[in-house]
Structures are given as structure tokens and as C-alpha cells.
Amino acid sequence: MKTTSILISGFGGQGVLFTGKFLAYEGLLENKEVTWLPSYGPEMRGGTASCSVIISDTPIGSPLVPNPDVLIAMNLPSLDRFEDAVVPGGMIFYDSSLIDREVKRTDVKAFGIPATQIAGEEGMATLANMIIMGKMLKETGMFPVEAVDKTIQKVVSAKRQNLIELNKKAISLGYDL
Image (cartoon, rainbow, N blue to C red; front, side, top):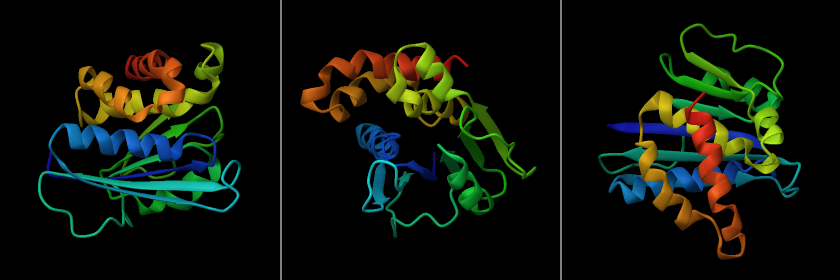
């Protein structure tokens, strides 16, 4: 695997920090070196939120991700802000239900996923982030999709245990796209 830098960005309430936490826990369970650096405005829900995750086979010097290998953009402002920062040859995953433009760069692989639309149709409106996560896991090969069950158990809070199966389903839906 080497080192993979991931930047997840969107509005507060879209599960940006949860997505980063999920990736960080998965890295830990796979015995990788991991950093997780959340960033959000004081508004929380509705404000901007981003999360940097680095997963590596070797020690990590800094948790900052100025040039991600992978960008997950949950809204248009995030894609506009971070598209140019992705390394050439990197990957961009974006919610095409909320972002009405294509990725402009031709030196990255871009995946438009209608995650919000699919989540709404499937009765899991708050899990568009995990649909995108499923697609990202498939395309990057970063972690086997079979490994996510244990991670979901760890990151879903005790008071939201009823969402474990829905999270698994959302990841599976994204993986199968």
C-alpha cells in the first residue's frame, strides 16, 4: 500500500468526520500507521467540514494533507476548493447528486456517484457518505470490503447501533456501482 493521503470534504452533517474516522479505524485494524485530522467550522451542521486521513505502511511525519491521493467531495464548494490539489494520477470521488459539473482535470480518475439520490431512494438519507466510501474502497483496493463489518462495529456509537446494518448496506451499494 505504501502511503495514501485522503481528503474528505463537505458540509457539516454529511458524515465527513465519520467517513474519516471509519477509514482511520480500518487502517488501525489492518495494522497500518494512521493519522486522522478533522477540521470544521463553528457552525457544525451546514458549515464546512473536512477531514484528512493518512494510511501508511511506515511512520507518518505529519497529519496534514495538502495534496491528497484521494479526494472525496460531498458538495460543489469542496470540489471547487480541492480539485486542483489532488496529485496527478490521483482519484476524485464526488456526489453527482449535489455537484452539477464534471471534474475538469484529465490527469486524475474521477467518479461521479449519485450518492444522495441513491441514499434517498434506499431510505438511508444520511448515508450518502458511506455509499461513496463503498465505491472508493472498490476503486482504490485500499481495503477488502469484507473487512468493513468489524470497523463499522467500532465506529458506530452505542446509541446508534440500529444503523450498523444500514451502514453495511450503504457501503455494499457503493461497492456494487
